[in-house]
Amino acid sequence: MTGVTPVLDIGGTHVTAALVDHATWRTLPGSRYRLDLDAHGTAEHVLGTIASALSTLGPLVGQRAAVAIPGPFDYPRGVGDFAGVDKLGALRGIDVGAALMRRLGSPPVAFTFLNDAASFGLGEMRTGALAGRRRGVALTLGTGIGSAFVADGAVLGEGPGVPPDGRVDLLRIDGRPLEQVVSRRAILALYRRLSGYDGADVAEVAALARTGDQAALCALRGPVAALGRALGPWLTRFEAEVVVLGGGIAGAFDLIEEPLRGALARTNPALRSVSVVRSADQQQSVEVGAAWYARADP
Image (cartoon, rainbow, N blue to C red; front, side, top):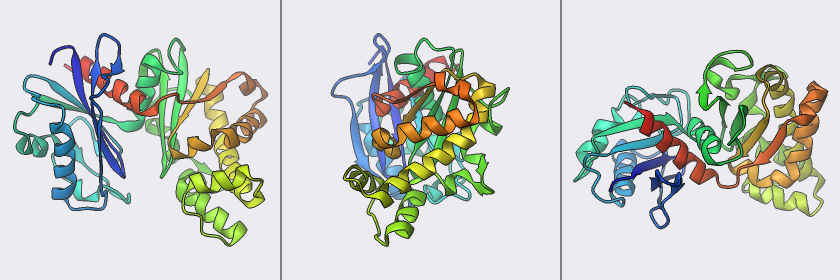
């Protein structure tokens, strides 16, 4: 099929396949297909699930497929790393592109791999909250923190105001790694300490917070305030115009927007002018960003 790019979005719990239309830079209606994925499964399970999702897009002969996948990953080589993380460990050292080629009846001519947060940032730049903006930051808040510092249409890994490799998860706050303070696991652990109740997920904690549960409110607001304190100096130097949020924690945007904005402003009152928004469609942004990147890949 001409005029489209096949895309895979590989996460810790799912893999999604879709076709992105180059004419509109939108996901082609009816093309998206999602499968559950056990990120702790064997390499055969993980690769088989990914290949099954990709095969729903039809014959891919002559096309370049885009793959958005979390790190650590050797993106130019398409080889898994995943050292020190609790997901997709079975892909460590595996040439993912070659392994998928062997499992597909009509494989694409090549794969282009890109970090999933970078894909999200590029998609938001193309059709989302960062469109028409010179400089902005995209954050995914969930099992960890993904980040993309976007300037003039590109994701930056270095430069003024950009953390090492563009990774907010490498920052520290109050002597601790930021992900130990702002993540699904950290929020649930904090809620458990404050309430004695073992919340099932962040969505449940958010629902309780909306009823006035003070422990739930603190469990959400404290971590995002810490995020604001850690991020503020970088946003100042980067001269960000917009911060766009995705990920499961962003589902509580009505509860976390104010404490995040307040913490940013306390680091620098000028940051009150920075727009903080929730992505209107994170899944589409990831797909569009990956396709856009692959289209430019020689």
